[in-house]
Length: 378
Image (cartoon, rainbow, N blue to C red):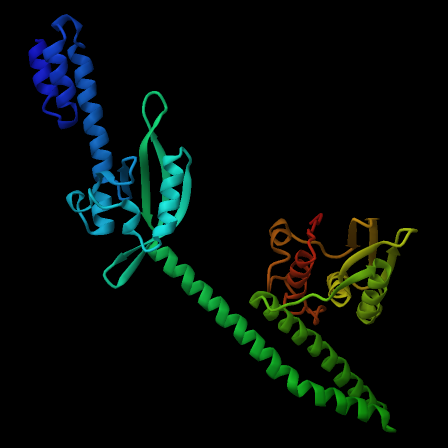
């Protein structure tokens, strides 16, 4: 019976040498029983099936960096069989050979490494997510490495297309903002000149005031578009200096005052007794605070209350704007600082904006090394 079990087991190539030695050198009484052999055979077949059917390339490497095993996924990925690569340094199969050599060296030193690699297939390139790890014996000594490679070419191309689309969008926004801004300057100038002339008809003067006010509003929207384009294209620069927070708050309140008063809101300002200072861009920090105040004024019903408070020290400053507005859903809170996201407009909020202001707040605060968050009771 022992010889029958050995004959079955030795049909599996990987076990042949070991089992032959067992048969020749060990007495029959010392050999495992038939059930254990069957488990060995089943395990070996199972692992072989996993490697054969895995879509990812799975390659084991010897200590010198040459392939020691090469599954079907590797054949399909590289277009080469094991005999064609067994004497080829594995890292040389990639376009970014240095990166592959570095990852392989880390694995052979006992570390785990994740890296992006490229492999050439004719005139085409395949983009890969590669994991390199150490291959160890029972005593945990490193005896080689294993590489698992996944083809992410389609995902890479889709991401490239998205980046190109985003880049074109940014370029379009910048061009649009410039083109819209150009005619606004003469409109504002004409409204100012007309406002200085005598107008016996009050309706004419009222119309001029509307033109001037809406031109200012459009200018603000376009300036925000320009800022977004600069931030996303990485051309936005800060002019840093040591600033008193109280002065920034004063400038921001002046910018938002017209809308706050038009909505009949009560504005409460809470500043510390000792002036706080920060290093930042005065214009941009003022823009941050003003955008927060304007956003609160827009989404608070007429006659509401807005509180602006400042606390901290000269190393860290916390600024909060709290209002009695309509609130936000949990979903909107999570997306409040995303570009072009805003609460649903109602007829009485004609100045709803483009959903740019809070996105700029997040970008400008981050450029100053800070963080911004929103909370709402719903």
